[in-house]
Amino acid sequence: MANRKITAMTALTAPAESDVLPIVDVSEAAATDKNKKITVQELFKGAPSGTESAPGIAFESDDGNGIYLAGTDNVAISTGGSQRISVTNSGTTITGDLTVSGTTTTIESTTVTVDDKNIELGSVATPTDTTADGGGITLKGATDKTINWVNSTGYWTFNTGIEVNGHIQLDDSNKAIFGTGGDLEILHNGTESFITNLTGDLTILNHNDDKDIAIRTDNGSGGTTNYLLADGSTGEVVLYHLGTRKLETKADGVDVLGTGSLTIPVGTTAERPSSPAQGMIRRNTTDSAFEGYTGNAWAPLGGGATGGGSDAWVVETDQTVTTSYELGSGKHGTTVSPTINSGATITVPSGAILVIL
Image (tube, rainbow, N blue to C red; front, side):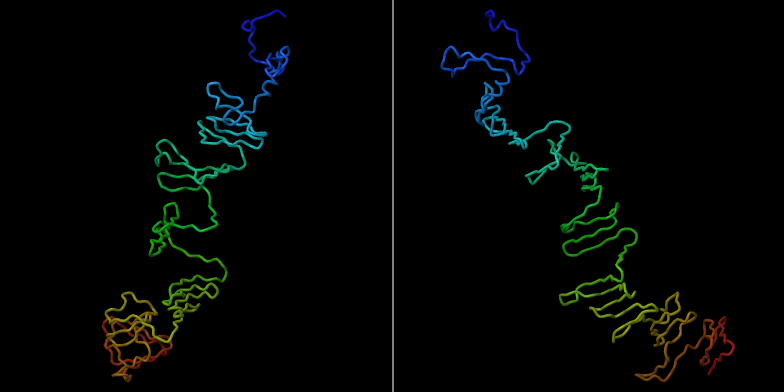
């Protein structure tokens, strides 16, 4: 082979693994054997391991930057004399900040673990509520499951249900609001608590068979007691006074309990209801008598006897008949010389007797 200058040789732009390079072995003692050869493959396989501060493959202008062998099955990249990236047979570790510039970052892994306690989203140069609008998390599925912040409402929105295995705490004066229009509110203002319904009916349902709905509050002695009970087994509604039953609804009426008294409306004749209904009762202070509405007229209740002190020797009746009246079926009547106004009639059915004294 004729002698040729290196500068006259043809450039090899794509060397193969088996291509041979001449090399001077400076460690060879015999001068005649210093010139040796090495393939491209063996040359790169024989790169020095290097260290973090002096990488085996480095740059002439800055030899603290390069690649080195950090350990068995561990190739590392060093900058400024410090390890930044470590690639092992089990994964890759990046030391320092990682900035990804692009439109989409795809992570194909089963689990993403973050040691930091805080994840920032929407961290643009000048963050505002407008730039944050619509930000959140989307879980892909048959339909997207999203958590998004909406600027127009100031709320986080979930497009699916939430199951909470723990407490939900709202600070004082913050409402729990329900309904698209915010029609139901639950609020504690630090002193008092409120349930506010702004539309339709407010219904409390208990579908548990034979179980009750109870309203309980302080009993005046540091405990609590019933004040109202809707009994799901008997159908009764019970009113209590400090835990003692005072009124019970029954299938055929109402029972008033206790050893005290029942207060009914009290007023003059002129104060009678303008549209009375059969069964009404009241105390008439004009006549000093209890009276009830029969469906046609107001009439005294009980014996109607009265007198001075505790005496009950006289029955007082009105002197004038102003409204037509018919004695009840199977009844007799007694009255004392009443004046019957024009247009008013008294009807005595067949078999009945009306005695006028």
